[in-house]
Image (cartoon, rainbow, N blue to C red; front, top):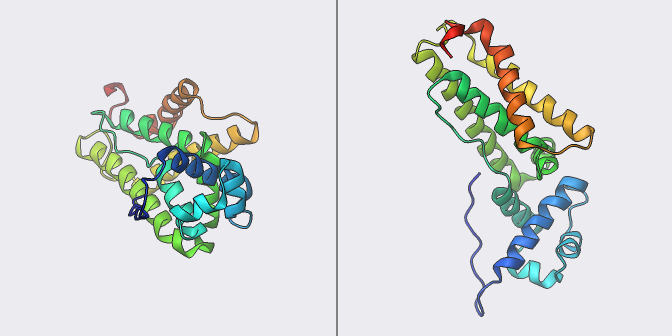
Length: 206
C-alpha cells in the first residue's frame, strides 16, 4: 500500500512521537471495533492526545485510517531464495505473520470492511493485487527453473497455500496466540512441504 503523506501544517514542526502514537492507536481501535466503532474520539483517547492534535494532522477519520494502515501493515515481499520451496516458505510465513501478528486484527478487518469505506477500497485493492502478483511470480519462477511442471495450476496451488496460511492465522487468533516467528517459520516449512512435495518435478532437488 502506498499513500501520499499529509501536508505539514504551517507553524512548528509536527511531533513524530505523537504521529506514531496516533497511528498505532488508530490501527488498534479499528482492529478491535471495526469501522462503525472507529472514531476520532476513540483514537485520541487511546493515544492519550487531544482531538485537536489529531485534526491538525488528518482532516477526516478516513484519511487517518488510510495512512495508519499504510504505515503499520507491512506488505508481503517478494523474496527470491533460489528455490520455489524457499520462496513459498517465505510467502506463507509472511502471511501468517501479517494476519496473526500485532496488527493482525486490523488486517483481517480491512479485508472484511474495505468495501464499506470508499477511501480505503483502492488501498486495499492495491495491497491485495501486490500480494497476488508476488505469489504468482514465486510460482512462475519455480516453473521457469523446472522445479514445477508447466501444467500446474498456479491458482489452485496458491489457494491451497494462502488458504492454509489464513486458517493458521485465524486459529492462532481464536486461541489468543499472536504471531511467534520461530513457530510460524516451522509451520511454514512443514506446510509448504505437505502441499508442494506431490507436485515438485524432483522432490529430492530441495
